[in-house]
Image (tube, rainbow, N blue to C red; front, side, top):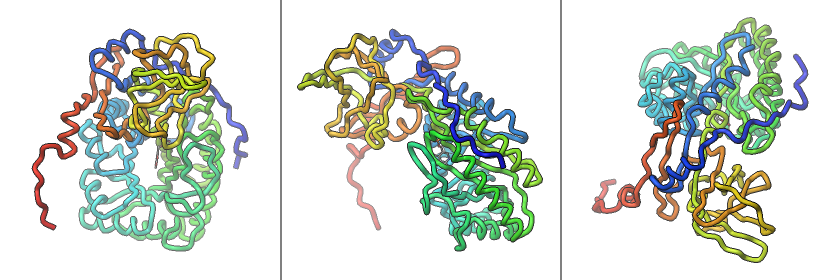
Length: 444
Ligand SMILES: Cc1ncc(COP(=O)(O)O)c(C=O)c1O
């Protein structure tokens, strides 16, 4: 087994993409209001091809899967459908979205968290045939669902290799929530689930899946995880006899830049490509490699545009109030996540520290900024752009303070702007919240 590379080659991604014309940003603001999200279709497509290029030397079939959870806007889904990639789904409603966007269930890998019979029944009826199980109970539920619906399902086992992961969000901690251990002895372990799948006629064992984290800074964790997986598979074959490995799904985690130096997809593939080839040799067959990605594929395609509505000086601080808040960018409050921010048009910086704050009456509603952000020239009426907000932002929005859903615009591959989600009016929000609907008694 080749040694994992200790230090990944870190490269800077181009932060200034997508480039939008300042005047066009102001025109959209005048016409449709602020805050608004703006997606660049070309960047979504470029991101797919960057991951595919990184793995083009993989000696076997390779598939990119888009993790819809990161951003389920139909225009984003349709763009990825037209790229012909796979989709990583975690909820039957996500399957509904995908089908409405012209996707095909054959291109789905389905990893449930709840793993109920009803959920499995619904997605199998919907045509999904590649399912990842993460618990023994979940596996029994899948068996029950296949016996009710009929048909054969390809099954992967989600394992938690319990490796150290350097990342903003870690999913592979010891005794963690997701997946089963490689070395456990209870029913909830990789070996016992593998045996159960192999003895169940309606299931076809397909391979293994792990997901190590999100915004991973050091690719060597994949190498460690694959090493553990290989020794598990070789040991399991000694114990239960040979079984096929058709798919290895190494989950998500490719990082987007957010203004920092991070490894690019080619750094990740360079760390594990040799190891993957030697795995195929030791398994005696080629397998399909799946890389799932939500953040990398969608984050840098999108900006949030907000307007400065007030400015206040307090001691050494210049407070700049926006009409956006963490209701639009939940991770800024949850994780103190820093997005690159820019005042449009910029200006010279003052000696005072600029503190960028949101419109919410909550002390958490202060945006984390650093010298990477360009906050010079912040004055009432100007626009402020947050970059890299395409993942886990729109989908986590809330109407805190009765704030209606903002517009989402897209610039298509031809440079044309279009509304891809209409902004909600306050009247619509009122109605959605129950508004004028008469109170109806419910029989329980
Ligand atoms: C199973 C699985 N795969 C893929 C992803 C996508 O991760 P990322 O957006 O970091 O690529 C997630 C995110 O939570 C996940 O849970």
